Amino acid sequence: MWPVRRNPLDPTGHRAPTREPTRWPAQRAAAGGLALGAASGANILNIGAVPDVLAGRYGVSLATVGLFTTVLLVMHTAAQIPGGRAIDRFGARKVGLLALLIAALCNVGAAVAPAPALLLGARAVLGVGTGVAFIAGLDYVRAVGGSALVQGLFGGFSMGGGALALLVVPQLEPPLGWRAPFVFGLASAVLAGVLLALGPRDAARRAGAGAGQTTALSLVTDRRLYRLAILHTATFGLGLLIGNWVVALLVRLDHSPSGAGAIGALTVGLTMVSRPLGGWLVKNRPDWTRRAVIASVLAGALGCAGLAGAESTPVAILCATAVGIGAGISFAPVFTGAVRLKPDAPGAAIGVVNMWGNLAVLVATPLLGLAFSLPGEGRIGFLVIAALAAAALLTLPRPQDLGLAPADGRALESSRP
Image 1: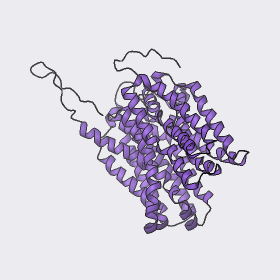
Image 2: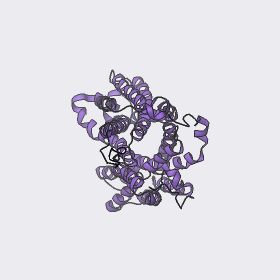
Image 3: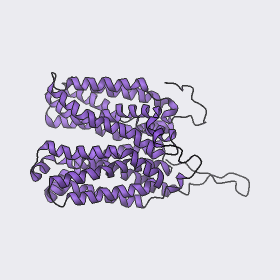
Image 4: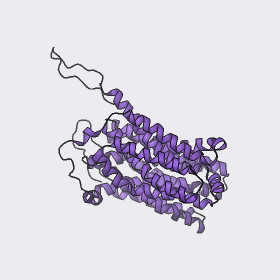
């Protein structure tokens, strides 16, 4: 995962291979960074695991419970660029620890009393913590030597944290009651904080020629970053958006609620496999990666369109699998490319790309919900989303902008989109 470093010439004049002396710190860094991603995902989806329990205890509707997650996502999105700039200045480890402290305190505050206003405020501040934690974790594993494969694993862990919340929180509800999601969110933040604190410092990476040349204006006007953002939106955004509404669509296509839930979980859960796979491709098969990205975008779009008419279970499973695989392959290439485009401001570059993906989900989620009131009960919306995802191939980033380069460092032959 991390390369073996060779010693300088020994007294005999021979170059002798030795084990990398920083291997253990690098492994600790990976653990801390991956835990940051998992904690971010866990704190986003923790209340979604028991919405009916919270609605009853707080005396609000399910729509209001949904608002508690919406306000978090708004702040999560808003924190991307400022959080990235802070990471570039102070280091991912320090800022990540602060983000986890915010998450821990917000969960403690939310557990004080079942007051809607209190929870709304806590979730808004928590969104800052989850947003910054995501960028810090991804930047940290990269800064201390993690390969594209480790960055792909980070993407899988960030989704896995949310999946774990959906699995564990309902089991905690009987003994803990309405406080179960907050106890789980607190525990995930504390565990991630311990693992991150044990990791090596990363501040030294900020030194070097050219540091500080990237301005906020150059970040938000760089067309290359926008190409990456469009690709991220068409894959990550597609998977998350479809994951929110696929169960409702499948139920209307006469699938049972339990079956629809299991099929819908594939659209998000499979990214835990496809994101590391994309990282493996960047590291080991860079010449295959761009073609794999193109195939994944097409697979996701076709899967989304297929779900609009997936009346049989095998077809629905196949289409959901295509969405889940398609949603993850481009994760590592996108963020590897963003970092290489802005090497003196990697955190901010990650934040710009991720911000647009999150913003698209925020805007499109309610719009897709409105499509269920149109003829076809959601089918039209799924077809439109599929067409938009496929259209992202028109602005596909160049190979070098995806962080792809041959091992010998020569220029790629196919450098134009």
